[in-house]
Every structure is written in C-alpha cells, then in structure tokens.
Image 1 (cartoon, rainbow, N blue to C red):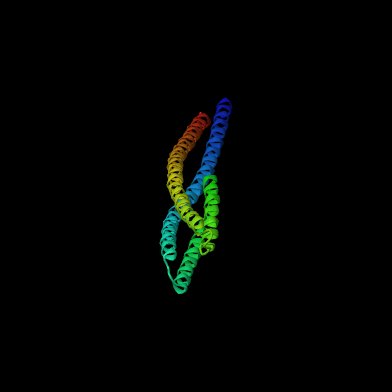
Image 2 (tube, rainbow, N blue to C red; image 1 turned 60 degrees about the vertical axis):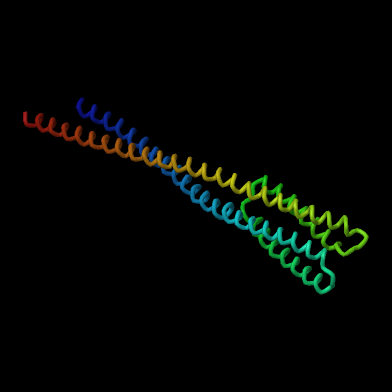
Length: 221
C-alpha cells in the first residue's frame, strides 16, 4: 500500500510537470505564430511600403526635372502654339506626378513622411500657382523665380522622402532579423520541452512496470 501511495505521488508530480511543460509549449507556440504573422507583415511592408515607393519617388523626381525643362522652354517660346503645347505637356507631367503621389499616400506612412508630404504639397501648390501666372508681364520675373524655387524645394522633399525609405527599410529588416532569431529560439525551446515530456513519460512507464513486477512477487509469495 505504501509503495502504491509513493507511486501515486510520483505520478501526480509527473502529471503536474507534464501539464506545465505542455502549457509552456502552447504559450511558446502562440508567441511564435504572432512572430510569424509579424514577419509576414514586415516582408510585405518592405516591398509595398518601402521598395516600391522608392521606385515611384525616383520617377517623381524625373518628372520634376521635366518641369524644369518645360518651364525653361516655355519662357523662351515665341508663339502661342508653342506655349499651348508646352502647357499641355506640363499638365501631363502634373497628372502623372499626382497619380504617383496618390499611390504613395496609400502606403503605410510614418510621422516623418506625413510631415514631408505636407511640405511637398505646399511646394506643389506654390509651383502650380506660379506657373498659372507665368504669362503676366507685370509679375513674370517674380513668378518665374518662385516657380524655379518651388521646383528645387519639391526635388529636396522627394530626396528626403527617398532617404527615409532606406532608413525605415533598414529598421524593418533589423526587426525581421530579431523576430527570426526569437522564432528559432522558440523552436529549440519547444523541442527541448518535448524531449523532457518524453523522458517523464518514459520514466512513468518504467516505474509502473517495476511496480507491477513488485506486486507479482508479493502475490507469488
């Protein structure tokens, strides 16, 4: 009876340890799922919110340079037909630029990007207002200077946004590497726990077998 009591206590201890280990595996598994989900989002964000916008920003800078060329050509145009053609060309640049800007605004934006975009929008508005008044002989000199200044500021804003993509991309990649390390650690942790559970179960089976042999000897005697 004493032996069975001891075996029961041992089994209870082993069962408690097993429950704790299994709960630890479940918790670590849930944490790992969250890390995996976060990693999936990070990889998606690196491409959709950083790499692709960097390409769009480069194209926007190219379009902004076209503004400069069109503006210079417009200022030296002699007849109305050339000016109309250049205005249409400038309008096409505006439309393409706005399409890319709308696409960029639809991505995930950090506070720094929001602030830079406000500056960019102000400079775009200033340029559009200046170009609309470019034919006014009374203010043409000031308007031209303002338009050229706006083009430079727009280019600076786009450059700052492009640098920011690289900075945030590096941060996301660093977070991804950390999460991958933690995920690998949790996998190893779960394997060790499973190994411990196996040892405990094996020990319980061995103890139970020994007790059965002991009972048989008592019955024979």
